[in-house]
Length: 246
Length: 319
Image (cartoon, rainbow over all chains, first blue to last red; front, top):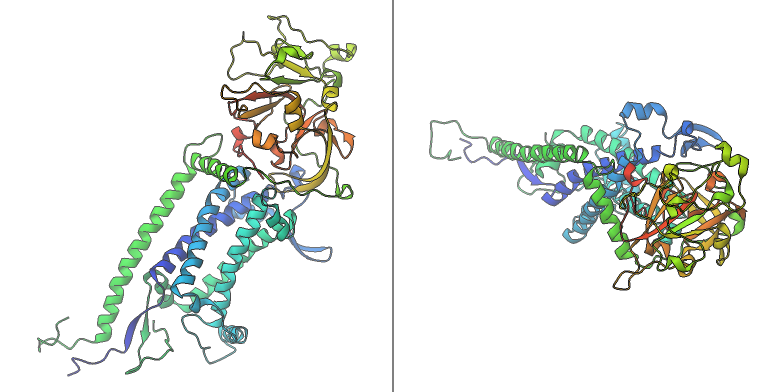
């Protein structure tokens, strides 16, 4: 008899077409920037060739825990020792990376989608709850609207990191023509140092991001491709709490 | 979709319909995504296998030329690079000796200048600069005589071309009239000392003091042959004595007040490894353009492909 029964689920738009394209386009662009960056960095980190040292390290005081990068990493990545290839790709893809980033920020600003991403006043406390929930130390799912507080912090931070990479990149690329930018970020050596650690930051972001996407499941991943999520609907009035229903 | 008309069929669960709609959408989106991924992979394959110009894929080479054009357009008048107090100057690292003759007899060194307006009016004029003989102490006969006043052997037809610079445009019989300058000639130009940051394309950098003559002052003393429209020639090609290493530069760089024909580092004459007796020093370019043991300067409209450009590096290399 239930020919006209109400549906219990609904298709709900989560990501706009523009966000999805820019998100996925950014993936190969960021990958290329990091990969070519590794090739460039390598040219300055070969003790055998009389180069000073592996320049950047993790350590306490004079005690070094880790130097970037150990040889096993280069061989594990099958990276070619080829500075000119690295430079060639880096100075080509930098435009695409910057344009995509500027387009993304512009879109966020004009579409109002920035409201989904900017952290609120209690973002840090809420993010802590998300963290506890992820580690199964907290039962109740933290509140979220499109993104939870931890996501908001991460997605805002990664935009700032992109801007920082562009700024320090300019400081390294044109340290004479744009010496005021180089001075602004603390000089050429500091600019290189920041640029390097921002790249490491992107890698860390990427790893956490992929881990979180795997935790969130298919319905969430699919929404970044289709734009839509299947969510439970509450009759008659839909609330703001959209729990994913895979 | 029209379930209301048929009583024989089981009622349709509206959730199933939504799930089916979502499946269709998913299929469509993933097909588009798959096509975009395939196109991206194809584009990367094309790029990595593109025809190479000077050991670099041509699209990447064109991107470097585009970047150079952007730099020239944005910074037609390049600002002064920051300078530092002498106390921050360090001993510049020795990094490469391509094209250097570390055993060159100092007195046999001259700076050949080609493309001058009126080379014959200078007392240092010779009919063919390529016949200038640079001597090396590795050669026993040079050790024996170490002449205080070496003379160029200007008689055409003599076989002194062993160490001569290979020429790209001229035929063997063509003479290259010009002048050959001694280091004293360059010391006669106003002396400039600057403490700037030297940057290597490999990534490292060093604050170092460079002393010598501004290229702009050199240009005033030894002006080039102007083009018919009265403009400067577009480029300068700089070469080592054996022609192995070369560096091409544009006049925007050369006229900059911080571009030096450098004969001192940290107040001392250049060591052989740093390119004694003369090198280029400029904070506008990476080190690989700052030629060491400079022996020949050619004013030209021809942008010569220089040493590192043939090995995959950017010709412009502007900082």
